[in-house]
Picture 1 (tube, rainbow, N blue to C red):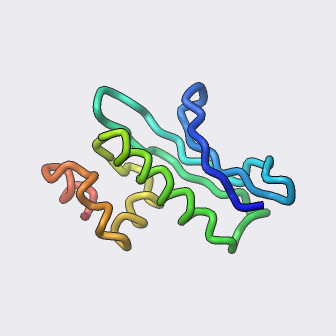
Picture 2 (cartoon, rainbow, N blue to C red; picture 1 turned 135 degrees about the vertical axis):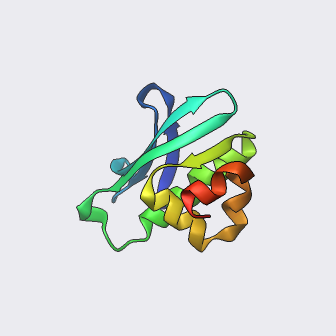
Length: 104
């Protein structure tokens, strides 16, 4: 089964589900949501799922969702920040005035 990313607003995080039946939480990206803005603060992939590119799938999904929702992104999380740095097509999600602060 293909990994699925789902928003869990009650936990303030996106989760990536994987495993044989697609129901195991393989990782998450925690966020703080405020008016028009989403701050990514921590991303984690369970070591049991390491090496499966789930972190990249999670990052792409959360940033695509932020774009679809018209949210500005503040990547306090080093993983999300680094992923944006490697995928400059997502840099526009970070407000121009904040890019230098995040090294983007």
